[in-house]
Amino acid sequence: MKRRVVVGLSGGVDSSVAAWILKEQGNDVRGLFMRNWHDTTGLIQSECHWEDDLMFAEMVARKIGIPFHFVDLSDQYRERVVEYMFSEYEKGRTPNPDVLCNKEIKFDSFAEEARRIGGDFVATGHYCRKEQFEKDGKTLYRLLAGTDENKDQSYFLCQISQEQLAFSMFPIGDLKKPEVRRIADKIGLATAHRKDSQGICFVGKVHLPTFLQQKLKAKEGKIVEIASESGIRTWDPGFPGENVTEALLMEMTENHKFENIPGKIAGTHNGAHFFTIGQRKGINIGGYKEPLFVIGTDVRSNILYVGEGQSHPGLYRKGLFIRRDEIHWIRRDLKMKNEESREYLVRIRYRQPLQKAKLYMTGRGIYIIFNKLQRGISPGQFAAWYEGDEVLGSGVISN
Image (cartoon, rainbow, N blue to C red; front, top):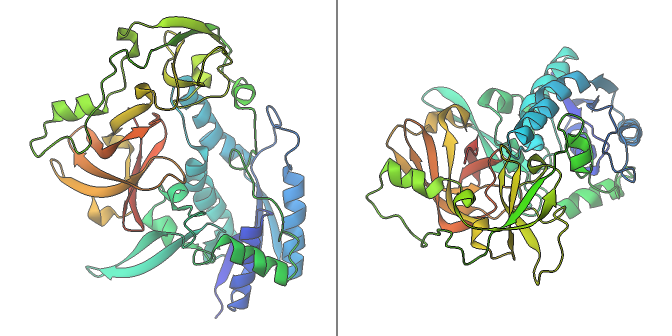
């Protein structure tokens, strides 16, 4: 009996080729397009809207010869992704809606709809891979990086579970992007040369302050410049040694305390919650040899701390901390125990090269200490840890 695979057709080339591959393999393939957003507030109008995506998805389904379905998940998306975004920005944290969308929508609400139309599996156009293996009499799944290092999207799936992986397929994970476009061109898919989508998952490219002002009010505050030679503490590569206390870990992962460092008022802003660590755009202050970057935000006092130049020490930190209730293990069989430490490769943003680090598990949570200083560690983002090309787990950066 054929497996019924429901493919999330987005109107892009990747999901289009994923559907074609599955059909060629002899599966009973269905295309399912989901609409997740209605509001155009803050949307950059030059970008394609959902109607264009729907049109391309339908064209692909007709070309491949598969049934096509439509579902509106905008209520779930607003409640579980967008409201979370507003809440996080209000707290001065920088969320990653794409990671949350995969966990809460694509592999949850969307998967439920796929099951409703008889799907045995859900397939997406993600550049990642899945492996199945047996351990202690149980079937477990590995989430692996995609073969194309330039397009690997395993980081975006760092919050999915074993149960979600069991139901998932990634048909293009072994391919590279140019190969995917060549296949689409060869078989005459309308999406062959269509641009990749950008911006917030299912919302599109937005002017973020305008988008956030749906819920967060603009509020004028001071921009304080911190000089690079102001005595900001940094750490030596390789530090610490073997004798590590939790007090030292806390010291190494805490945010820079710019309020204790003398600075000068350089201008004003419209709301500290609209900015994130490492941001350059939107500061709008001239007269410097090098650009100004955000090195810290204080949403309570509505102060934005900035520093001149990409090498400003305020942009760099030695480590980060993840609270215990925000730790997620894809490989639950490999969970760390209290007072255990392990060396893993860690990524704190999409497309960042994997970084060598040591993870320390305590009663409070996980401390991640990097071999090298890391630029732009932002609370609210996700840190994902890997062993080789396998994603083992992830967590929301607390500080």
